[in-house]
Length: 103
Image (tube, rainbow, N blue to C red; front, side):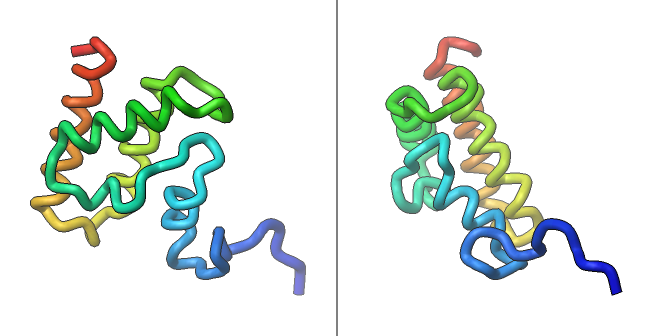
């Protein structure tokens, strides 16, 4: 039997939770704990903007890093994301665009 290249196990060792490891242990952004569970889109956007601007490890612009992290979380949460929280996070994208003057 051939050896598998790479690993099915992400950060933390659980293949079902690799995306959680990415958001919690992002090398590009230091996120506030629970940022994606908050119910205020403007607060989420402010936090992501602040994290992105403060990071000296990101590889792209602060806007792109913040939006990418938010989009990554929404996409990876998939069907497990409550419809109400998905709406909050989608509105946070609009707030993030405004915060960066891209509305």
